[in-house]
Image 1: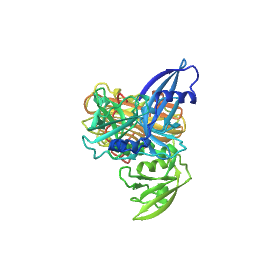
Image 2 (image 1 turned 180 degrees about the vertical axis):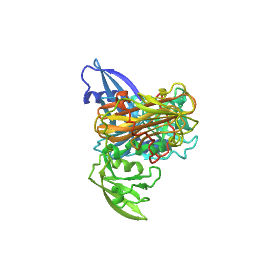
Image 3 (image 1 turned 120 degrees about the vertical axis):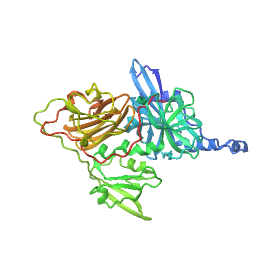
Image 4 (image 1 turned 30 degrees about the vertical axis):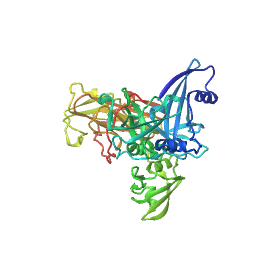
Length: 508
């Protein structure tokens, strides 16, 4: 990402924005139409690769007035995921700016809107309403990358527009950051020249497949990192969280890794099951979209509404099957009704050495007490080899969609009632994870579990929701459960295994 401050005499408008772009950005040069033998000889495999992928890359610009006739312009890059205008980029590229737009390789400019964000993975999905046909990237896999294989980065380097830089895969499954508290793992390292403005852009292999999303540059020379394509595939259903986000239920999941988009789960008594969808069915059409890969399926669910009919085109045993699911209503847990309550949380302390959260029902606490917030500081005299379990009530101030986060070193989990919302388990440095849940106005049972093995320790819990920006849950929003109802750790279907990730540093 590139940050620049400009002075201006009038309010920022679309005209001013276009002028700024004309001064600071550029469009990708079109291939030469000459057919001389010299031109043909110069059209190397790299040139042909660039010509194939250029139209799938977009320049992203955000403009934020800062007063006094001044504005901050931030530049980044994105990749077209679907021909209907969905673009994947970094969260830090689109996390600020009053005027936000995308420039295509042909110079056409469109405003964009943010559809979904996953800050702790530094991923965001944005949408442009293009009047022209768009060319999506070919989404590749990162599970078979080879050290030394050729790669190509395309990005809005220093706001100059499409800039191409070749390189190689320098390292695989790299951790980033100098310490565990700032580390992310599973990254692709490359020596391709990455500059401010490249953030969110694609890293291509020699076949023109996107195998990573550029996210940061290290302080050293020729050391840059990209989120692996397989990681994007893995967390995309979580990024979208379509049923919680839009309040409907379809009740099916698909494979996001394979070439065939196969159904992996159909919930019992769900609209998908009622429509006749089966595990193993291959999806090639959903809603109004043609499905090319598993991510497209979740894109097709954006904006769907309760009660609407959702058509599915399936392939089963070599035969085409059409199904129509009537979308149900997302179940919102009811708030608890309590006449008398006071602020605080109950907590219990456990002694032991673990690599993941223990089964709290099988161990006995060594101490208990009351705290005013979720924090490892609830106990001050134990530093290593302990676990905490907090129980209480949290206040949802309004009806709507909420996001809860835990930031912990080592593992933590957060439950609302009996629903596992955040799974941040495992032996790792400070790492933030989050999850979405739809709630009504009122009080809800909340349970947070945490363990610390050795080294540094941290536990913080955040939330955001309707009219509520992200912040650590304050004491005023936490209440003690009535003593007549002793707390137990809720049991829930285990979340999909996750690879440890941490916070990012030095975004490009």
